[in-house]
Length: 85
Image (cartoon, rainbow, N blue to C red; front, side, top):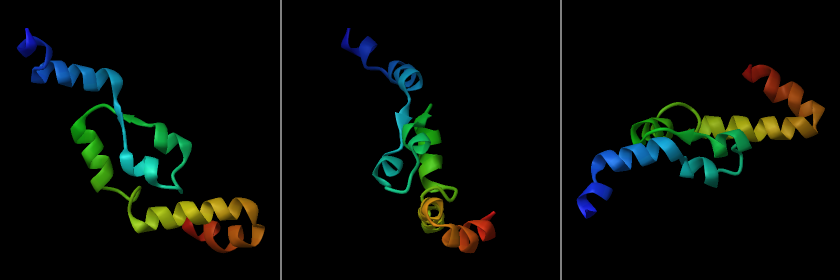
């Protein structure tokens, strides 16, 4: 009975139904709530998210930090945010 409950197929279905959030997004203070709550449907997709793209690269963190600062200061908004888009 234990084999039926803990086989690879059962784990795959459980992962797909529940999803998994990115631990790097959860620990990143510059990550938005949408990033923190995004559930990835598989281990491969989560690994791709964590290793590719600019989400966790220094440029992505820098950009999010300055976008948050720009919301509070119009001068910073003119300097940084307008040049990044």
